[in-house]
Length: 285
Image: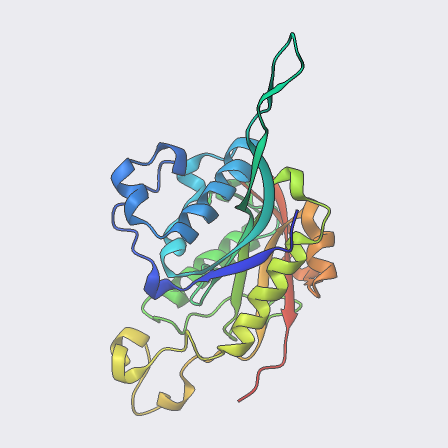
């Protein structure tokens, strides 16, 4: 395997109008495959291999609306592949057709940055399918009450939603969420995941205001703020990252600088146990 390189796809270059989120890439129509950016298609193909085929997550739960507003990163490896086998005459041993190989660029891993706003932090012991809590009735009464109060508080607040406080998040600061980290099985254990995480973090550090809302473009009402009171309090990213990590991948995120948020606890997404982790980086300006 040659030296990997990483491609970046920003939301403005992403048109998903023909994309059917209920189907994996291998089942999309030919016209859709010709319309969607190649980097996005490569990212989805990797996720199909890892999450749908390997982890058996339903396709309709794997691809979500956040894909259209996220920054996607795909890492490629230069792989030498045999495209024509050698043919030898059985009687004379003479090579009738030589073996021929080509170096191809193969997508082997992906990760995405999902900007704010985000859904509320998952609850301890919660079970989620397609990002929906499905065991509300099994939670204790205090947790139920807190969830209902939070849902009421978030209504009509646009991008200034509040969340519950955790060990590493005050419930108000905006954060970027890294997710859908996936590396093809045969390329794991080579530091590929770490390269993807570092690239995503460095890209966000270099573009800290990329997702900051603009009153001029969006308007006060859309942003859920009072123009006379808090126009200067528009949500701005100040270097905080969050990840909902599969428990089996905690070590990968820890090596990349993420810390477990004990207060967030553990929960299940698509039957897989997850844990919340955060990292703060220095942001210029």
